[in-house]
Structures are given as structure tokens and as C-alpha cells.
Image 1: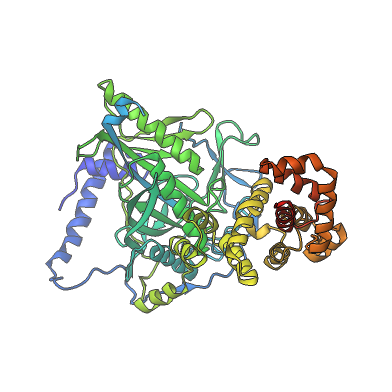
Image 2: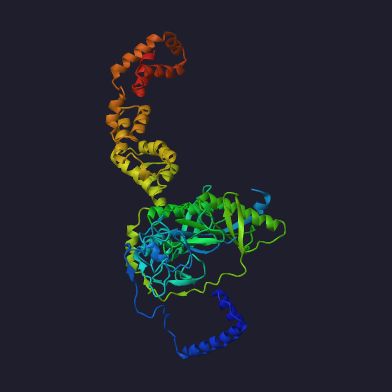
Length: 96
Length: 484
């Protein structure tokens, strides 16, 4: 399995990243190295082993439907780069 | 329907999002109450802070399974939550926790009826997911060039109910959606309020020539926040697609935003490629396994569902289908009906009054039966007076109106207003005799065959009694005294 520059571009676009041409070729090489390394896992015989969705052998961890205190509004908005009233303020996003 | 529409058929699939009426959010303990101050119901988990861990709300699982059972779905034993990755300011984590390969319910079906014809609509899946926050764009207080985000809604539990493309007309879509709304309300898992967005509907629609088996290019319709909007938007879009095809053009895959005020849909964006959400299992959540026993237990807890209840109302109370359907339209109305019948044991009388005066008040005041001021007990007391002939039906309507705003019982109101019906034969007979004596010409005319005058005599006696004489008794005494 190997990855092309086109695929790197697509992944970058989906992740909202702008990559320079240099970065694109650099990451293509690096990602391929990583994939080759992980490829080693394919040497294992996984016949009859069901897919693992979680490393811990735990299931059904629930919470009761009971209210816990929320953060004060000031605290919730503390990290906001911009705010207006008690809202997070972002560049206009309506899709028109 | 125009000729060109006749040549085509529409293929419609619906995706309905229902906000579950849990007290808290799906993965954290923040309140999920609607209408709180902006950003007052958030915590590190639903704000998407690094290093936090979501923990599943058991009630959300219960509610989703109930909906699956009510729509004849198979409940999945193995469940995995997945991350659906996309960027939008109302989604602080950059992904929505949803279910992908393993939805909690699948392969269901429901039956809807339009124009007396039954249609089976298959449910492809119902999955659990979290809602996103809410963006505000157009209010006065939003600066030009910006949008504001309220994350209170972020993390509210949702179920998404996805049909197979089995719907063919806007009317079927309307019927399906009202059934879904009725079911979530019967199950008490969602308030079904479309205006407030607790129940939201998107539609995928394409058209094709009748007889064709290939699907046409579909568009997606959004922003239809009422049953009527869904029907109108689909009618509009089907017509638009048919017109395009008829004029030799093609339908482009797109998302359209319905604008109820203009009755048109705006194309939001033409999809260049299908979204690539890069779903993968969420490593922060352990697997969810649903035991058969638990499902069986929930099944026993299900309320009697609308279709079954309607049939029972017809069988048990001898009601016509239409009446039974209205009485079972909501679980609360059906309960009100049955509670009252239980007290007074007169199914027909209660049905007449609920379908007539009670529903009229609910519609006029735009209230639900649970806000209706006359309790079943007080309502039954009124109906009992009618059945025992103690008050006339016109007097009963007056008492009904007083009951709406007073705490007094029907008996007391009747006495206070002097509405007790005179059913005493001798008292009525003397009034009848007086009337006959006052109108000798009419009596002669009656005896010569103008029997229609009976209504006139009844009217005169009622007037004499100030409306209190029992009309049935008046009638029978008149017939006796006037007979040759």
C-alpha cells in the first residue's frame, strides 16, 4: 500500500490544511514510511479474530440521566478568540 | 396533476432527526433543556476540550430501542460509536459522535395510509448520535460578516430515522412524518415539536419515468420545519425536476434550502463529490452491547401504539374508524377518553362530546389535552347529568362553558343556573295543554294532516318552560294528546 501526492492533497484539504509543494512531497514520503511500517501487521494471521473497536475489554459503561453542573458562561467562553454577548463569535458561515 | 407529472413518478426517502427528551445530554451531564441562556449548558466534554471522555447516557439508549421496537426494527446486539469528521463552527470537536456501520436499530417498517390506500415504508436504520450547536446569523445583534454560536444544543441526544426510498408522493411523506411524530409522542421519547426543531426532516428526492427502475439524480431538501412545509417543498421540487427533464435538461445533484415564505427552494450548493466524513470507531467509547433480555423488558414496557389502540377503540367501544383515529391521535387524548368512559360507561356519549366540544376548545385555545381545564371526573359528572335526563343538551353546553373556568362541579353549576330539566310528566303535561289551548288553529291544521307542526308545538312548550322541559317527554306527550 502506498500513498500518492494526490491523496496527500485530499487528506490535507479535508483537514483544512494548506500545504506548500515542499510539504506535500515531504509528507508523501513520510506517510509512506509510516504505512510501510504498519504494513508489518499484515504478516499476522488474523483469521477468525474479530475486529477490535476498543483496546479495553469493557462494555456498557453508562451514566444515569442526571444533571451535573455545567460551566459558568464566563468560563465556557474563556478560550473564545472572539465573543459577542454570550455567544462564540465566528466568521459568517451561512451557506448561501 | 399535469400530464407531464403523470408520466413521471417521484422516489422519496426521508431522514428524520428526533431530539430525545432525556434530561441531560448524550455524553455528559449538562442539562438538555431547550431555551436556556446561550452557552449556559456546556462543559468540557460538549465543548470539545482535549482530554475529556464522553460517557453514554443510558436513557438515550433506552429511548432509541423503544423507537426501534415501535417501527418493527431489529435491535442490534453489537453497537459501535463512530466519529463523523467535518468542520463547522457549531461542532467544536471537529467530529460528531454517531453510528455508522452498526446502527442500534435496522430493517424496520411502518404502514401509512393515503387516500384509503395502505403503503409499507421500510426503515433502513435508526442510529444514535449527538446534535450540534446552534448558529445565529440574521438577528439584529449579529455583526455584519459574523455568525454567533450557542453550544447548549451541542451533545443533545438524537436518533436519526432513515427510510428506504419507498415514498412516492408528498402526501405519503406527510403521512409518514405525522406517524413518526405520533410514535415518538406515544413513546414519550421526543416532544415532536417541529417548529422548535425537536423533530427535523430532510428529504432525498428524484423523479423518473413511470415504469423505469433506475433511479434518477437526487437532490436533498432541507429546512422544512412543519408537516405542511415538507409536503409543499416536495411538491415544488418534484415539479422542478419534471420541468427540467421535460425541457431536455438534467437534474444536478444538489442540496436545496426550502423557503416557506416564497414557496421556493434555493440551491445551497452543488455537490461536487460525496462528502468524505472518514468515519472510524470512536476510541473514547467502549462498545455497547444490548442484551436480548433488556430488549424484551423494554418491549413489555411499550405503551399500546396508535394503530393497535385505534383498532381496539373500534372493537371495544363500537366507534367508527374515523372517530377512533381522532381519539387515538395522541396518547393523552385517548387516555382522557378512556378515563371518562371508565367512570360513566357510555362510549358513544363521551366520544360525541370529546370529538365535538372538547376538541373545539383545544383548537380554539391552541392547547393540548393535558392543559384542558376539565378533569375526567368533572367531565363525567356533566355527562352523567345529560344521560340521566337531568339537563338538556343545550343546558349541558352552558354548564360545559362554565366548567372551563370554574372549579365548581356540574351539579352545583346546574343548580345555581337553574338549569335542571323538568322531566316530571304531570308538570310537562300541563304546559303542553296550555300551549294547545293557545293555538287552536294550529291544532286543527295538525289534525288535518299538517304533522310538521309538531316542531312548532315542541318549541312553544320549551319556551314556556324556559328551555328546561325534557324535549323527549314533551314530544311524547304532544303525540299522545294530539292523536285522534
